[in-house]
Length: 268
Ligand code: A2P
Image 1 (tube, helix red, strand yellow):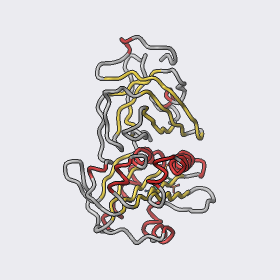
Image 2 (cartoon, rainbow, N blue to C red):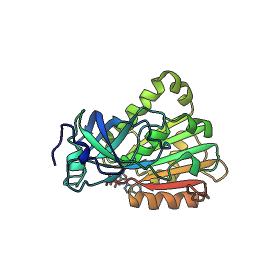
Image 3 (cartoon, helix red, strand yellow):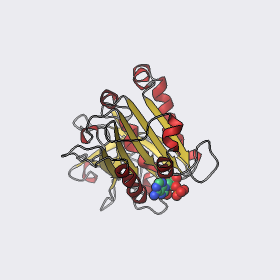
């Protein structure tokens, strides 16, 4: 695998775009974000994911990545873990502006506004890089048209791992038009499990104890007014899904909108 330089058209497999890296930012030893150019013909719904790979390999390895940028953005952003010896991320973490990334042409996914029934509040429960689809949705005006209150809940092991989300929410609050839309409507609740922090504990424990709702001054979740989206590890999905069901919510899908939807944070 050779990184850098422009691949010849033969290095772009059929059904893929070869896109140029425009920006890379590293947060910790295990987390970074990158942005790539967006082909005009590429359409997706905020919250969906695509398959990402690198060129110049005989058989490129692809992994699912939620698009972290909103559907109106002229570039595409991704938020990634760096897996030691991970077949894709051990190389992907070394990309630089100007390099080429492969992206399969078809987006898909269930963490989209269309898969939820109308409601008053939407809860976005995430751990780790499970934040990515919500980074897209909280930047999409459609989310604010559909819900009066949006609560982005993000749980990580350490405070350093919260930075991508914190920076994003701060930039939204200060943005000229979006700032007004977000003001008083977007709540950002962060929690850490493996070091001292203002708020501590697993997202699931904060839901079951009710502390999450008390801290925010919001009523407990219920099927009449609340909708939820969940993205994290398999264990986190299972446990959070169970809590949504306990709170009376029913799972939905693209072809059958419901009260909550679930998707795995892929590269873990
Ligand atoms: P913990 O430190 O108690 O394992 P990971 O990096 O392993 O995906 O974890 C990201 C965050 O998700 C950590 O804060 C971790 O807490 C938490 N977590 C792990 N498993 C679950 C689960 N089943 N439900 C809720 N949170 C979880």
